[in-house]
Image 1: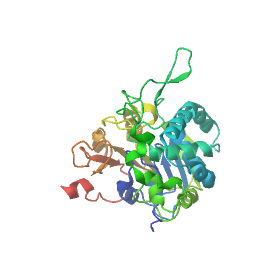
Image 2 (image 1 turned 90 degrees about the vertical axis):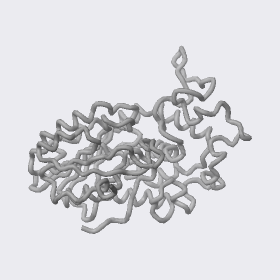
Image 3 (image 1 turned 30 degrees about the vertical axis):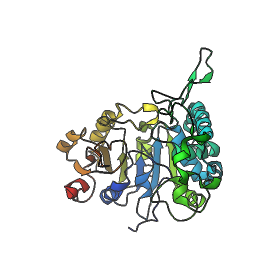
Image 4 (image 1 turned 60 degrees about the horizontal axis):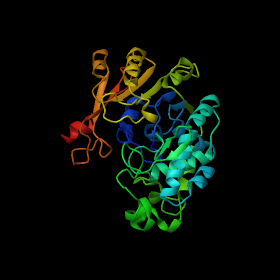
Length: 355
């Protein structure tokens, strides 16, 4: 199998599995079908070696995230156009509120129509995801609250309880320059997302060469044959998805639910708590099947899988919200558990190699 050109999501995403993707595919091999119920940034799918083969199905509960991937697949140029806008605090707040107000309706339409998408919402979402500081993009209402009449009203200040990016700034001083007063690299003289420097546009060290428009076009080409579903993870774990062709072979399933043992909940609106145990129970039962190659991600909450013949691969990543030790590395080693049907003996893990 040959490696594809490096493709990554054009937005920061906490909890992605890019560093461990090569090991995942080494254990999966060239399977007939691939299923990812918690798609997120798509790091593992995008790292799949060629030839792809078979049917690929991805899913996520976050409607704004799924809308982005669907829109990029179907109309990358429209997404790039909507995202082509200089960063300003007033627009960031306004678009945040606009997206939060429409999140539920967007999710409902995505669930009901497998081909529906909103390119404008996708462009605004990825634009904000790259400009927002810290967590909280499109979660909650930002610096707004619902009044007695149900209408959204601006809070008297932006402080406290995660009410927005300026929670520690009692005013917007500094000559009205807003959040970018110390970040000159985000301005680029108002050239927007389609300036020649793709890395500056989408804030990713591994951005491919070319403009962000070309980047999205490459992602669109990769996603051309991928089914993108939106909803609960169980929707894509039925037999019609696991073996859509009714042909012999293996189906690979990557399960990366929000971690019960972690300090952060990366799921949309914090809706992921408690799912890990349900996913583990499904994986334990389904892992008995010889035609399913399953990888389950977590910390140490899945240790019971060892008794059923699952193999752990432990690793550490750098950065993210778990970086609280001053050394920019996870306080805890993450683990990917591979079901008995996965191929190959476990390689020395990144965690063990570093120790």
